[in-house]
Image (tube, rainbow, N blue to C red; front, side):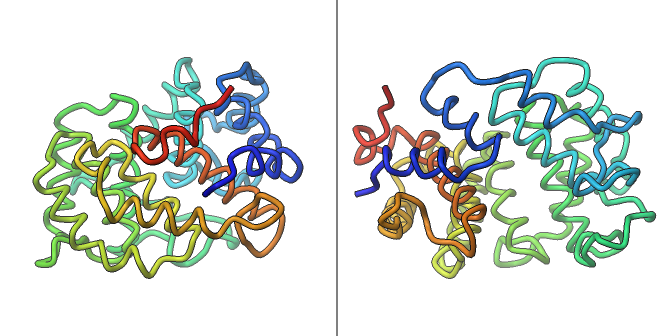
Length: 274
């Protein structure tokens, strides 16, 4: 049994500004929309993108721009010129071959896996962009087709994309959003064993990738994994992690997961908020 009240109180004590505002959002209470929007948008570059990891004077990053838009989607703050400019930045950056990747002049702090030129990074960036733009209903059909064609070229015989397993989790989300449940299910089945091997952080993120997949709403695997995470709740209400910041983030992510998956029958009573 996952104690919702204890988890909310834990995040309220140890979470950052965004986490505290997210608690209000989960409870369907007014939150600081201006403050959240400012925090996510204040350093937007002139081209519409956002600097990687908030590094001052860094070039606009595909990864960072998708990350900011994803949080704005969670808070339902997707209207306005800033979001439109970010979407247009992503649309402009698609390569002729259909993929996306970071600019060459990234700061030294950026890890090697995110740097341009690697096929696994191109695949990850591409699924990330397609997923975000589909969530916003903001991708023209020709660009969607071009991106999907690139992904198909890099789909392996086991129905998984080359490179990072994270890319295949996002692929399930993309396929569900374009109503291709048949292929989404094939990818999901190929991912089942990998789901069991994930750390708690990645597992919560992965399950959230499947939110739009109606056929997974009653999945025994998903239910078991949610129960597994629930059983890891600590006495102070939070989920385990290396430090309080990470624990607060994990706990908040799981609370969002529970709300998003709220029509799972055995959880329905547990996530009703006042």
